[in-house]
Amino acid sequence: MKLCFAGLGVMGGPMAGHLVRAGHEVVGFNRTYAKAVEWAAAHGASAQARLEDAVEGVDALLLCVGRDEDVLEAVTAALPALKPGALIVDHTTISAKLTRELAGIVHEKGCALYDAPVSGGQAGAVNGQLSIMVGGEADRFGELADLVSPYTKSITYIGPAGAGQMTKMANQIAIAGVVQGVAEALHFSKCAGLDPELVLQAISAGAAGSWQMSNRWPTMNDGKYDFGFAVDWMRKDLGIALDEARSNGAHLALAALVDQFYSEVQAMGGARWDTSSLHARLEARREK
Image (cartoon, rainbow, N blue to C red; front, side):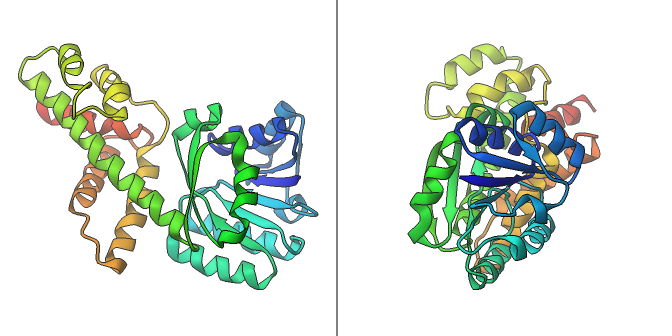
């Protein structure tokens, strides 16, 4: 297929590279054109400076950008240049409200938009092991799943437009609570004078065990917070979830509290630290 991949950052760059290696003709686009040129040179692909030119004749446009306004700008620019029947696959985490609005506009133009946010972080993108949750019309889900298979570990069709985004919200809500729990358990262990490595050995194989505990307890213990998904982005995602909760009546007391904790991490200078930096906040309070 001929494709355009817009957004060639730490997630989108590797994802687009997997599509090239799978045999697709991929045109790269990035708001910073130099980054698109660099990506194209590294993958034997092409790049365009204008999204309108990048989507000319493509079968699908894939997006992995930043925020609602970035997706709106990209779809608004690309849609008039897309051929009828083209797919728009949005891997960005944005609001379900905007997704539903854009899906209607795209449908009127004879194309189809799917919200397909991903989970798995930078490592998942590099290794082609992302989990994808999808919202949109069911009839072309199989086509979408085949398209994104080069970087997919699992993919689940959830429901109509916006359902994928709301599932990603649930994912981030769950992660926030788990990371805070792991951070507090490690912090408590240190305050109690226990050996953190022995505590991890004792509790990680039982009911308390999780991916976050196995992978982030040791790095938290070493004071290392440079493992991908940044606090700034987590706060963006939690903000989206909290906004949606105000609409649907969900009570997200823990998510709101952890979001507040992340604001304190930002104030400490940790805006680009990864989400496990909740532990740094606790340790800083202990040292006062």
